[in-house]
Length: 310
Picture (cartoon, rainbow, N blue to C red):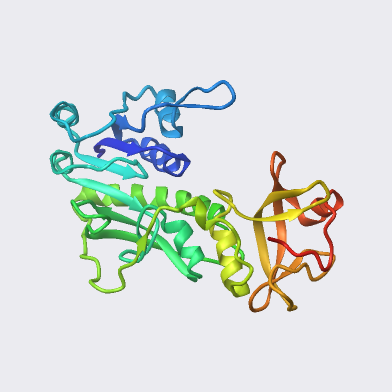
């Protein structure tokens, strides 16, 4: 048995799920993704990762700017899908779209709902210091990630795990979870449970103004912000590294021992004092350069004990 599936997704995170659905023999009748955008030095139109995978398999691709107009909704309904699978698509699905597939619209969401509904659940879970998260298959309704849940896979957030690390793990586990959910749906055995009424939190979209490191904060909070914003937009500090003040992103860190005035370099291995405790910078990136380990960074930067980072 197989299902007629419309897949709706955009970034790298969604690619493993589309690949697994194809691999399991379901008929992906169409892919919906965001329209190509100019990117790169030549500002050429760049298709989304999902679009590129769909092209490889010869799957028809739709890139509407909105799904709110009648023509787009009629196009969607004409596909006669059994189910729509939605993974980080980026457009709101209005009621006529939600109701068009015979078996509804399933969304793969990267949190343990109702915690971290919204746009940035991976980053917010790490920034909050959560020790556990997960991926969930949810039947979509008109609310923001409020639909009933059909399947869940929990994931431990280890102390130094970054948003990229968690993203990569979730994308693979989520793909497996979704194809298991589709198999159960095809058998008529996928049961849904309403989300809990308490414990609701919202994962607001990351604002670049959040990325500047505040060394006055406790070390644990600084560390969580660094790893939650890695690699994008990247938590950063400013310092004079020998050629004037410049901005440096921190991509990996760990908790360290020591204390001092917040922002002060404490040793020759980039332990930095915070409001309470210290963090060690493990991997950094100077403007216009590739990411590098702390030891490599120190070879090209005039920075040592006593330096104060901004």
